Amino acid sequence: MSGGAVILIVDDEIQIRRFLRITLEANGYHVYETETGHEALTKVSQLRPDLIILDLGLPDIDGMEVLRRLRDWTKTPVIVLSVRDADRDKVAALDSGADDYLTKPFSVDELMARVRVAQRHALAESNDDEVFTSGSLMVDLNHRMVTVRGEPVKLSPTEYALLRLMIQNAGKVLTHRQILREVWGSEYVNETHYLRVYFAQLRQKIEDDPALPQILLTEPGVGYRLSAVHRFDDPDE
Image (cartoon, rainbow, N blue to C red):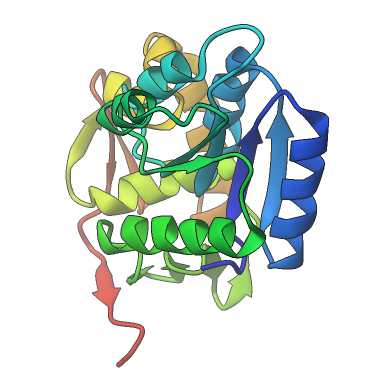
């Protein structure tokens, strides 16, 4: 799962961030970083990372609060990285939605093992081992690859998250609030203009005729629906 996977590091210690970045990039991950909880919440909605490494001792809001806010709207795996080694802290973090808890100091081998396990668990709980096709559009959810008429299409993290959400709910009408909550977070449920902008951008990239969309359909006054005329393929066949 390292190929193309995005990891967000949230830690206020620059030395830790530098060490994690070097280690993770050496293993093929794309790495972003931040040092505050508020910025982390914003970056998660913007970057849609595959994994978050979260320190609890942040300078603005406690990492536990960051974790709770994340779990209000996203299932992105979170590995807590902290100097707090008391059992009560570990239990509290896991009960609040952390997928794993790693105590500082830690070894590179242990860190990478925890990252791989978290990624495997996330993949097992999703449909992201499948390939979606609709007309000339093909989306390999496992490898985060999108092609139209066989040509690669570059999507931003938010565009990809939006398309994946629609694919995972193919044929169903998703309301404006549902989409905004799932892709941007609960604080953005009234920002319906985001949807007009991003659906227009997606249609320009994946529809044969963006003016007459056949894949991403608008349900006036309600939300959006991905056309049920589609197919999921097993990549191993």
